[in-house]
Image 1: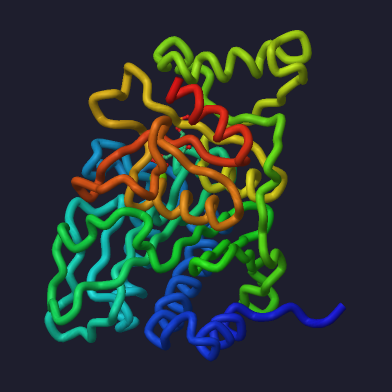
Image 2: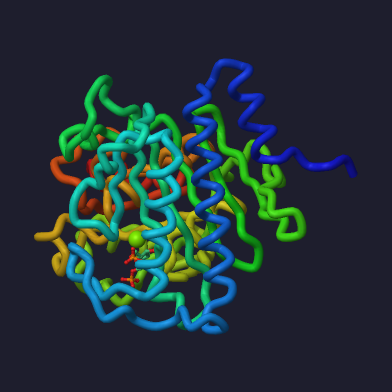
Amino acid sequence: MSEAKRLSQYLAEQQRSGRVDADFVGLMNDIAAACKLISDQVNKGNLIGLLGSAESENVQGETQKKLDIISNDEFTNILAEGGHVAALASEEMDEVYNLPPNMKRGGYLCTYDPLDGSSNIDVNVTVGTIFSVLKAPEGKQNPDEQDFLKPGTEQVAAGYVTYGPSTILVLTIGDGVDGFTLDRATGEFKLTHPNITIPEQTSEFAINMSNKRFWDAPVTRYIDECLAGKEGPRGRDFNMRWVASMVAEVHRILTRGGVFMYPIDSKIRERGGKLRLMYEANPMSMIVEQAGGMSITGPERIISVQPQKLHQRVPVILGSKEEVQRIWDYHHE
Ligand code: AHM
Ligand code: MG
């Protein structure tokens, strides 16, 4: 078998073809470096005392894990020092992070969830990093929240890294989706999953069923029909998964198809949803669409939503086209 392409080679090729610029290549190399560090620490866990709660809360009132804070600091520091971003925004930081005055600015903005699914850390289940890249406004020393509030259609790139049995980086720069596995022997991400596409049909869904009594009618209808199986209107049996780790869930869907749902429900209606638009829903939606799937709030395409604030939440239904289209139809009937 010929040697798999390294991420740095892949990025250099993309640059030569004019698809991305040198600044973007630098940024992606920084993101990969940050994720390798996070991967190493997630992997070592309590060998270096990193499991457990940090006994602090983030802006959304959620208890932070030690690894949430460490991952955020590492991701932020590496990107800030790299000189390829003009500002940063993270699930774990209340406000936009502006670079110190003496630091070099670059042409991009990056939003991220440094360690998604962190309720899974202590139980040793897959977690991940999610990131989204936007163009920075020209000539502005310190971009502010307004500069970040662009719909997902304006993302230049999006990706995630899953820290599971293997560490895998999945990336789209708007021309399909490619996956790279971290080779721990050489410390390099290598192209192992070129041109990922989501099967259009599926018989597998993922939803937190404990919220069933709070759902809206279209979601209840869809799930009830799946549960009715062969004897019901769908005429076939469905399978269910729930990892409670969006990165693991999306990765499964990119691998073998499926539907992932964190829909609106009456318990979270006031908050707008559970998952965050700017650093969870938008990047995952760009990846899913680029892989041939669909991603909606219910009635709307997620990447068309105009964000109103940085930590905005949104309902998320994504995955195999035929099923998501059906759920969309149920919301429009
Ligand atoms: P987090 O960013 O605080 O980790 O929350 C996001 C996670 C998603 O990865 C996952 O889909 C969801 O929360 C699980 O929620 P629940 O525990 O309600 O099932
Ligand atoms: Mg998260």
